[in-house]
Length: 141
Length: 112
Image (cartoon, rainbow over all chains, first blue to last red; front, side):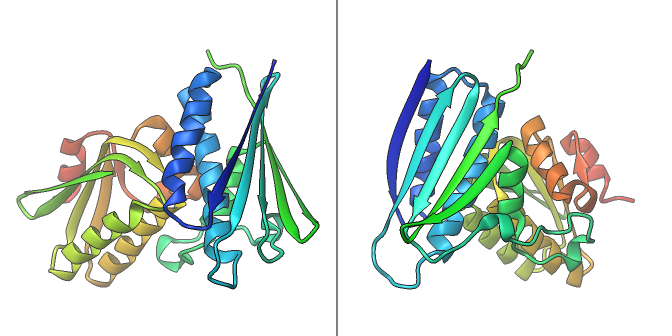
């Protein structure tokens, strides 16, 4: 059984609320556990926030496309934007063992997204960034 | 997200309800920094009804902790749900923030 959905977001932070609603509806339709929903929602929020906040040098409106699918116990999310080239997989990982007061304030978002997804890959094609995230669903008892 | 502020002795308690994400975390950060700016040094965050947190929420807490450090203050959290606790663990925040299972334990930690 395969389920797919495509949604378009504007490059405005208010869209993060709508992302939460859309992912929650998708999760309910496919009977995800609340834990799976939480981890996928956080990962997508972090990556979408990054695109909205840093991908665009102009002040124009842009469309960011999310394709979400759920097939044979695997969640696949593709995030596509027409912003400047940026590969989150090359972003420096924060040292989570550094004392709190010495921590830089940023850097945690991509780290959490990578922890919560099983696999992440990046492509730059036709002037667009394409991030492909996968999460294998474990049986929960 | 709903934020309810209360006070027990000299400890300011912020009770969070709902989702602390990119759009709502700045509200909490503002409230924490305003409290610290007005001289409050003992802050406790009630997470019993907090359903969601992303890095934006962690950042807001980190900003508050850094401000409190300058004035020898302290911020603690209590009653975190398991999946919220997981985010703290992954980010290394569990070692940095005192986390408690109950309000009583959290408030008692200010006495020592």
